[in-house]
Amino acid sequence: MENTKIKIRSAKGLTLLEMTIAMALIAVVMAAILPQFRNIQNSWDLQEAKAEMLQNGRVLTDHIYRNLIEAVQITAISDPGETNGYIEYKANDGITYRYDIGADNYVEFGEVGDLSGLAGPVGKLQFTCYDAYDLDTPITDIDAIRCVKVETIVTNSGALGQDKTFTAAAYLRTHSYSDSGTGVLSTAISVEGGSSSNLVLDMPSPRPDGDLYIAQIAQQGGGSINGPAGWTQIMNRETQGNVRLAVYWKIGSSEPATYTWSSNATLYKLGAIFQIGGINAGSPINASDDDVGDSRNPIAPSVTTSVGNCLILMMYAAEGDEQVSGYWPSGTTGIFQGDSSGNVVAAAAYIYQNLAGSTGAGAFKMASAKKWVGATVAIPLVTGIPLSP
View 1 (tube, rainbow, N blue to C red):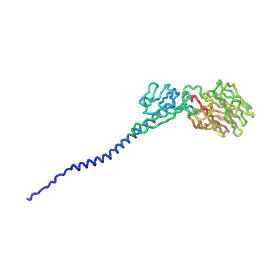
View 2 (view 1 turned 90 degrees about the vertical axis):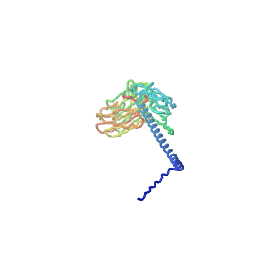
View 3 (view 1 turned 60 degrees about the vertical axis):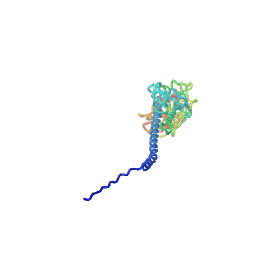
View 4 (view 1 turned 30 degrees about the horizontal axis):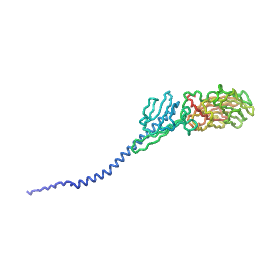
């Protein structure tokens, strides 16, 4: 038998040179890859820090905004130029709360004397306050504050992240818990039993100085209406010789018991004088407008206020006597409604508006279509909108 020879090739190992080259190649590859991993990690950290910063900023400004718009009184405030500021306010529960910056640069919140960390860290917490009429000039008078603007810089915890500034503005219903002297305080109504050239209107009683008095006069037909000395006309308009509506205002000062409005014609008339407290005597009327029509729904037209915290007075006069249920515009409180021997009818209602802007029109109701004149007057209040008018 022939012998079979098996040849086994011996394994050849790596030489030192080959190993050196392989290690060098691995080092080159790792040198190229590791920075990419490092960039990915840094990018992740930056995005995570940015998301945390945005969340903290939004939570903080929303928390401050929601609490301040429900505040009933600002009790203390830092100087408007202070970037490490504070504010204290009394809430509806009667407790006084505070916002400020703690030692760890976190915004603190809670009852005065018992604060805890809310959000942060921040590099700035600045409160700037304004009154109801001037949003350009900061104030510190706590009794006049109606708007609070807050600006905070939330710190980005990322190594290369940028800080972000957050702002918010809260329009307040401050001091309303105790303002029994704000809004429509009383109304005096006068109706002529027959046609006359004059209408004598009673003043409300008592009639303190410094309050605002609004007179509403309705007259059958298109004759003139002339106001007494000391009263300023807001509007005086008639429609097609069927009905006229006139509205006047004055600031109380040693007021008599009555005032007389005159006309160039002997016609049926009625009217009312409304006493309104808590007003800005220097600028008592912010906006007004009037309209005419022929329908079942006399319209007090929409006006646009330039300030918040306003009493919106809606009025109209129409021919005939068209009283129906649900007489007043939706959401308003009726204060006056009457007629003069079925020849002319008039009414007034009011509603409070917290923010500046359009009031929307108010639609009264009558039983049938009649010619009418409507008017709206916006009256700024400086001592707060009453919670329960």
